Image (cartoon, rainbow over all chains, first blue to last red):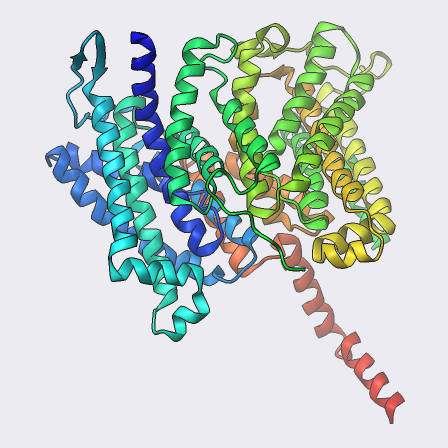
Length: 293
Length: 330
């Protein structure tokens, strides 16, 4: 029972990282109908920037704050320069462009920082806290709080501000929004910036756990795909629920099902993607789409 | 056209006698990659289905050959076709899944497949040798030929011959009914179905066929390197195949060979500077090609050839057809 509770909490911690990455994917999918395959590598690059700032003497939380600004500005610039020329192109074209970004960013990080594992300072104490018989790590709790806090902030931004309304409007009705005076194309760039910030935060959270290196996010982005598909790729709430439940399921499978253990977590994610897309393509929280012929 | 083909054939036949053995070995790789990339030309270029996971089929081919050769002592004459068959069957299976997943979803699912390959290979140790992988008997030319050709040269010829068969088969099949049906499905599935094209049959056929080609390529590479290990079949391999087909040219047979050359030689050249340069060049090239030259290298070459021909003969074909039409109407 005790062990079960610990597994659930650590599952929720990894799950909240999946949830943030999945939300970043959903933010871009909603506005452009495209998956940004470079989302994980953008997060990895941001995490390296934070590490570098920290190495140069900035306290870790200040490094995070500065990196978030860099991640936002960088992603907006990226959208303007690289994605803008293919904005109306076929989805596969944009997919290939984001794959190009994925490969290029991975190489850039390897070029500047090398492929040696780096320890990333944890912003939270690693001491356990005891609640009754159960020991939780403060790091896990910290990860959950920061990730869910980020998701809440994004939710408030989208639901309670005028900017959020403009972002939602231009995602759902680009033509009408343009008529109402919203600069739809800039809203797309802003979406990229926000997604990049959410990704960067999940990078900060995961780096102390898995060590920092250029391939750090490659597994996590696959889990984020699975989380986004499970929750429904158009649904922000779905991304969060999908991410958390995937984290818990993987933790429990790893602890209690010997056949799967920790080795077969990626194939499980693949199986989830395929099964969900075959059985219920809209995911748990998405709406089934009717295609007009 | 026919002359150019004969010239290329002669060039391929004579090259191993003038280049060092190591380059012969690299050109064997080029042919193997070209077969796999031709599979992607069929799948992405002709049938419009994307796959970021064809490294998985190369893994199936490679391990099939490795298990048959190392474990059962079955020669490569049998194990290469079996590798193609097994990869093809699994490909048809994935093709049925792909029917339900359009565009972006298929990209996502196949990338997850590519990421699942190394963990699966490591997990089932009894069959695959786990992390260490499998060692194969070192390759050599058949007994009677050994005094005349080195093993590098022999496998060079074998691989290019297989490539020639794969290309010829694709040429004959795609120029007729099958190619027409695939292109029709790609451009408008609804219209194609209305004309009686069976989407389930043709789309799964394309998937299985391209997977079989990837299986052949995987088997060849495992045989010539005498080694199969999980880290060979990483996500990077699947992405390299995609990069090869996009840079070479998505709709072109020549593009498959150019893609094979790029995938084999670009990393070797880049590694002289820094191992990370390869990824940067690949990534930037991918973006530039998609935005500025969607036809890839092959598309660029054919445009260049057309421009030269137009300069050589000022009365180019389009002009004369327009004249012919206006004459008729007058």
